[in-house]
Length: 411
Length: 102
Image 1 (tube, rainbow over the protein chains, first blue to last red):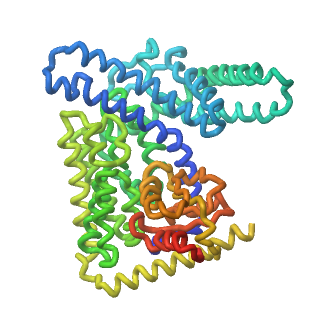
Image 2 (image 1 turned 90 degrees about the vertical axis):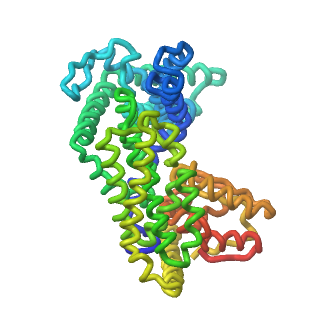
C-alpha cells in the first residue's frame, strides 16, 4: 500500500477477487438502464413521488396507471435480465435464454412451495399468493443464469459436428428447451428455496445492521476496496442485490448509497487540490468534474494510491455519510449508477432528496478535513518534493512493468 | 521489457473493469488525439479485450488482469486517468511512429 503504483505484479488474490466481482457485476451492469427506468418511474409516479407531490395527494388516474409497472420491473424484469445476461456471458444468446428460463422456476419457488418470508419487525408473514407478491430473486439469477448456460455449453460442445445435416435446428431448439425446462425444475425445487432462505437471512442481517446503526462500519472495508478497483464488484455484486431486496419492500434502500456516494472522493480530490503534491494539483479540477458529475469514481482512486494514508479520510468520511443516512432512515429507490450527484438526485424520493444530497456533502466535508490534516495542509510539500515524488513513481512503475514482463515471456 | 513500435499500431484498446466508465472516457480522449493517425481506438472490459488489439492501455491496478487475458499483447499501465505521462508517451510514439519500451 505504500507505493504510488498499486502492485502491478502482486499476488493473485486481488485479481481473483476482482475477477469474481467482475463476473457478478458483469451480470448487473449491462442492465443498469432497466434499473434507471425503474428508478425514474418510481420517483415520479408512485403515491409518494414527484407528480403526486406537485399535483396533490388525490388519485390521478394516469399517474396511478403508470405506477403499476414499478413492481413488475423490479421483481420480474430485472432478475430475468440478470439471469439472461449471466447466461449470455457464459454461452452467448442460447446461454442467456436457458438462464432466463431456469430463473422463472426459482422465481416462483416461494409461491409454489409456500415459503413465507422471515418476519423482520415482529409482523406476521405469509407466503406470496402469486407472482405479484414475490421478492426480487437476484441471488437465484446470479446462480442459475451461468449454471444453466454452462450445461447448455457442455451439451453444445458434446454434440458439435455429430448432427446430421438438416437436423441442426431441431436439435438446437429442443436441446435448449430441454436444458431450460430441466433447470426451471431444478430452480423451483433446489436453487429457488436455497437462495430464498439465504436472501432472507442476508435481509435479516442487513436489517439488523441498519437498525443497530452499525452500517457505518462497512466503510472500513468498502473505501479501501474501492480504491483497489473493487468498486463495481462491491457495489453491483453485493449492495445492488441487497438494495433491490430492501427497496422492493421498504421503497428505498441505504445499500444503494454506501459505495455510490461521491462525497468521499470529492473530499479526497479537494484535499489534493489544495494540499497535495504541487505537480499533480493542476490535474485535479478536471478529475473533480468527471468524478462528481460524471460519476466515474475510478478517477480519484490513483490519488489515494499516491498517498495511501488518505484512505483513512475516505473511510471516516464515508462512514459519517452512512451514519447520517442510517440515523435518518434515508435511502435511494434504485442504484445510483454511475455514482454522480445527478444520479443520486434522480433516484431520490422527493421527501428525502435534500437530506440524501446533504449526505454527500457531509461525507465530502469530513473526508476533506481529515485529508487536509493528513496532508499537513500542504506544508510538507514543495515543488521539488513533488517532482521527485512523481519521478520516483514513474521509475517504480517502470520497474514493476519490467519485472512483470518476465512472467508472460517465460510462459 | 517489451518494445512497442508506434508505427505498427493499428488498434489500441483502453480497458477498465466494467468497460463502461473510465475506459470510455479515456478512449474518447485518445480517439481525438489519434484521429489523424487512422488508429482504431476502442474501449472494453478488461476480461474481454479483443485478441486483435495491438496495444492495451489500462490502469495499473488492472494491468495484471489484462496481461492474464491477452498475454501476447503489450499492456501500457498508467496511474492517472487525466494527463498521465505513460499515456502521453504511447500517444506520442504512435503519432511520431517511434518505438518505446514498456
